[in-house]
Image 1 (cartoon, rainbow, N blue to C red):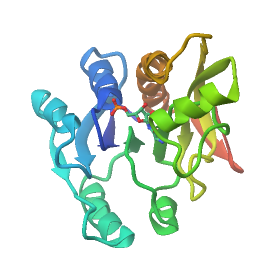
Image 2: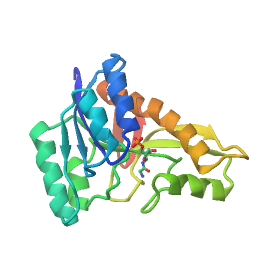
Image 3: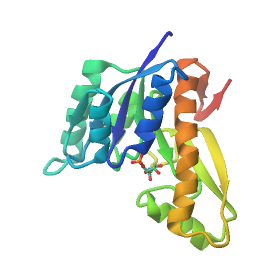
Image 4: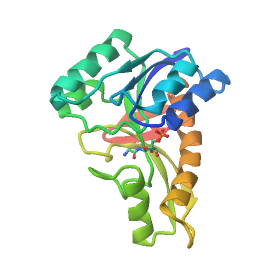
Length: 206
Ligand code: GAR
């Protein structure tokens, strides 16, 4: 494979999306972000896409059933037929139909060391609050394949950060996010270099 085509799905600020775009622009990874899809018409990630001349599509979920919304996502995705679909702060849970259709090319970044602190309701600051409440001394981020078990698909790569005694949700979240911005483009690069393997529910990088 030469340069892989990547579609990113995001719902918010899009700093993770930006980290992939920057690595592509810098020639650090053999990937090309061909489209941003968001479900949130007010998301800042749209501005980021515009600034980089990346095609974007707003597919609002409001007023649609989960499956109706996914059908619209599928229509966009199938037009492009990307090599990799990255969920980068995309705050939607998929049905089995969607996940099965893209299994093996659909990955997500989560702001904790999975399988801890994942699952429905565990996103953004909820995750960091739970980590602080647990008394854990390390946290981090995980990139994993998406399956029908929310946040529990095969883990591809992780990064750790310390949890400090005086951390707030924000300070821990920032430390984790810094690692996300390194880990996510790195993993996209692994895909571009055909280094990711997935077999019998386990993933690894060769
Ligand atoms: C990131 O921390 C990402 O890990 C998290 O949302 C944030 C998006 O930030 N995702 C989840 O919590 C998914 N369960 P961004 O909009 O600045 O990229």
